[in-house]
Length: 454
Image (cartoon, rainbow, N blue to C red; front, top):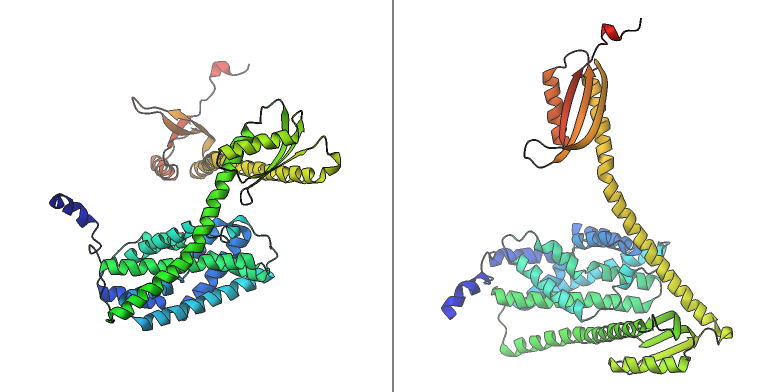
């Protein structure tokens, strides 16, 4: 059995295509540096990421991730811990602190002067880290370390930079500080700390797996103390995110259960549900209704149904719009919030449809531009032509598949130059791939004597 598995296991051997340890060591130490160009690139990347978060542009944020040099010192800390190089750890930690400080100051300065102060979805996504962020950081860092030890892995490092996302959390923390929102600032900085710790941890693990040589031999007691410190730091980072992940799962489960319960009343003749509000974090369901069913009776039904789905601790608030006209303000606010959400959804749907229509129209516009260019070129090459026209259609030669055809129709009373015609058609073929452009020349037909007027 072992002999049968050995070829497969050899495929997973990290020593295959591994770079020389001295080269790996030099590359990692070079990435730790925080001087000159690295600091300027860092400042520019922070500005790009801050602008991307400010205008809610995912593409801009991804671009900032790709040019950020923050990964180097974090990898240096994990690598130094794996090879017992404590001077490298201290240098990498100091440079990481310097770069994080510069990033925060840059982000705070930008958000202090930016006229856009609203927290958009891209920014809010960096304020509540969960256990999934821990897993992303660990496996992203692992992929990065494997790439750093290869002779050539061209497509991995950019993906790692995007997945681990070190830059946006620091920008979000800067936004929180600039706007006095310490909840956002602490949540975002916690996400940055999670990414840093678990990228370093995965680097340490894969340096050990790759068997890179240690720089300093330490005694068993010191090695054990280092292991305990690393485990303690990783646990302190992971436990709060695990709690937040559990709360997120519970909130999503409640929202899904509430959605299923509310679906039972869409066609119920006893009641008309005017508005709903579901708060997964607080496990609260609010409804505004009208109809023959009493609010207390509906509340009891909904609570029993939620309890049957494992949501016994839910709070249900039902208001009868027709019986409590004096208390309409909360209902109006609820309706207004739903209308705003629906309008935003409709606007986004319309925007997406507009983008699709633009994409469908672009080939037609391109063909129209090509037809105009063909007319101008034929007129320039053959000034003796009496008339020139371009028509689009579909053609088929023999048993071939029907294909788009552009016919350039020329009426002239003299023979056209064959070489010029050939050059034109060759140029058209390169500019309109997939379309057969044909030049058709028809001589001018002189009127017959019989057809002349008396």
